[in-house]
Amino acid sequence: MRKYFEPALGVVLAVGLYAALGKIAPPLILVFNPFSWVVLYFGLTRQELFGALTGSVCGLVQDSLSIGVFGIGGLSKTPMGFACGYISRKINVGPVARNVVFLFILAVAELALWKGLASFLLRLKPTAGLVLLQPAATALVVSALLRLSTKLRREGA
Amino acid sequence: MKEKRKLAVFCGLIFLHLVLISIQVPKGGQATYFEKALFTIFSPVGRGAAGVVAKLRSAWSGYIYLRNVELQNQKMRDELFQLRQENLILKHRVLEFQGERYMRELLGTVSRSILAASVIGIDPSQYYKSVILNKGSSDGVKKDMVVLDRHGRLVGRVIDFITPGQSKVQLITDEESGVGVLSAQSRIMGVLGGDAEGRCLFRYVLKTNKDIAPDEDVLTSGFDGIYPAGLPVGRIIAVSEDPSLFKKIVVAPHFDFSDLDRVAVVTADLSDRR
Image 1: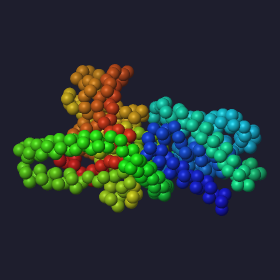
Image 2 (image 1 turned 90 degrees about the horizontal axis):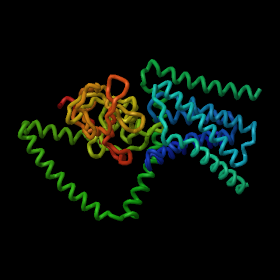
Image 3 (image 1 turned 90 degrees about the vertical axis):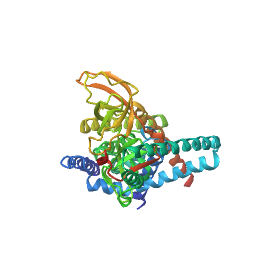
Image 4 (image 1 turned 60 degrees about the vertical axis):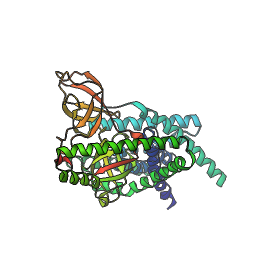
């Protein structure tokens, strides 16, 4: 049961955090995407199946709170979650620097896919700006979260 | 075998998303029941989190950070005094032109038709596309109701995402929005939509038109049948030529994202009172 409870709690926390960030300063939600944090965290700690499932749920929840085409978020976050779990099983992404670079590449790919789908389906012109900081922020935050959870688990054991 | 099962689940999820995207095509942008269900389940979480931030902020500004409060109070008292005088003069001036009974009825309708709401969520994909309000169908909110900021400036309209306790508002800065507008001085009409960068574009003004210029105010024209005429929308900040038949006119919206905590939903249809 706990296996599913933690990702579910992660999704709820992501919604809460997204709402809090928007209330503090709207541009913050362009830089910090708590939904991506949850997907990458569970992709790395629970492998590809959980990564893909969390990606689908987080993407759809993000889409339901947004306007536009419902499913774009899910379609871009599902491959990110799957790839995160699959690749981390094949290569060692444990060291901090390698971990940050790996997460950064995945976050860039997700953002590019999402922007591409939005431009194609909504005929929107691709925009730059603060959103370009999102992959770096995602990589740093998820890497820090992983270190913290590993430390807490070690102390708990 | 396990690898194949994982890959099958992944492909299944991708297929599910493609199906979800394609079933929206015949609905023409209308929300699906699944999307509405997710919104109904998760928007109260956002409402709770936004409430906590609002309480913390109010505790900070109300109990801890009290610098300049006296100065602000004095400034607001002066402003209130000025506004009361202005309101009185304007009421009398309007009464000179319209029948007193009609005007009293109209003013009564306007004050009854304002529903105050709080912004509890901002579009996670692009913050200038939409916001979520803490009022919904149980408060009388309906599709296409006009939303104004605390100064009465246009923010957007309610779209068909309405649950009993929450509703979604499409902002005028969204690329897909369309507002019938006119320039305040030159009286040139056009359609206003978002520019994907938090500002708006005043569209369909022919290049041959030389009258429109920066610093001119933009108001709603009322011809779209949604927004009543005369609402302040924004100010023209740049006018330039582009390769098409039309001018490229950039408008800075009057409403401020950082001041979008409280908004007013206009529950009555004021468009027939033009």
